[in-house]
Amino acid sequence: MIDAGSTVPAPKRILVVGAGLSGAVVARELADAGHYVTVQDERRHIAGNCHTEIDPRTGILVHAYGPHIFHTDDAAVWAYVTRFADMVPFRHRVKAVAAGRVYSLPINLHTINQLYGRAMTPCEARHFIRSQAIAGDDAPVSFEEQALRFVGPRVYETFLRGYTRKQWGVEPSDLPASILKRLPLRFDYDDRYFDHRHQAMPRHGYTAMVARILDAPRIELRLNAPFDGRPGPEIDHLVYTGPLDRYFGQDLGPLGYRTLEFERFEVEGDAQGTAVVNFCDEEVPYTRVTEHRHFSPWVEAPPERSVCFREYSHSARPGDIPYYPLRLLSDRKLLSRYRARAEAEEGVTFVGRLGTYAYLDMDKAIARALETAGALNAAWAREAEAPAFVHAP
Image (cartoon, rainbow, N blue to C red; front, side, top):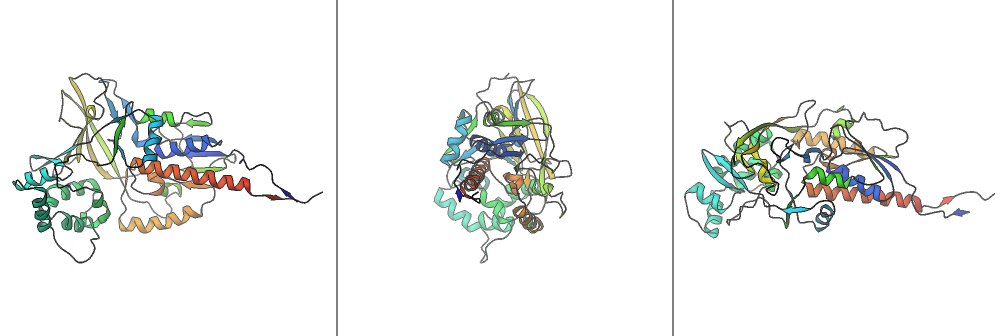
């Protein structure tokens, strides 16, 4: 006989490793579906590299691991974040210092006219940059090839070559062309760094937003709790958001990451007049300076003091916080081997920038976390719906 039973899945006990944005979203979705979720993180705080905190000396809301600006065209993701935070409109504008002059980024009509000492119209500038670009028949493979086809030698040498070598620690000819494809080139005077429909900051910071996401009755949070690779027997499923290679003990070799170091300093008054200034010249050791009062101008802070970070990039060493997947050719080959092992791992789901070794903006990380949680909930619901065949007495 067939015992139809209940189609409601029995609650599972889930361990989520990592209390960053991806882990928090997955945990909340699973908890809202009726499962019991433990979220653990090796750090003393939640929100991962998005962590924000009030500086005790100045009252300024500081992005502790570098600036994070939320931007998206995804209506579902926007609806999700606005459930958990009051999102304040924010238009990110970046300046660049090159050869002693200040320019507007991303590269736009003002940047082009300023660099060449011209007063070109959009149409003239478009044709001019096209004339400067180095033509080629084959699709560009490297960052350098893409840049020279995209903007030509002078723009590349002024704004991209030195900064890229500092940021990534390798020759631009060794980086994939896909990195440059994320950088906009505009032939108008629009100096907004992003052109997405929704651009905003959580009024009280990302840590407060993640805290609200994790605020659910079926979620238990454990901080200062490193993952030793062995979930207890009471755990039905593991969601892992840490570095993919670390999960496997790096036994195939380490994947390449870049990490960041921050040199904090305070100044009197307004240090640079904007949130971010990039330093493109290679002889300047840092890549950019961030001034945190400009990320949240609605926060009341003493006008006489300002908190700034000089940002330095270098290869991640053991114990460093990994920020950006390097994704060189050797990394991509190694990644395919780790991914094959991850797909074969039973009872484990890998998610997030580190767990999938992918460069993900915050909106993409949230979207993938929602998809992952949805897929897990659907799979467990199907398990509950499967009829159990038993012998009649």
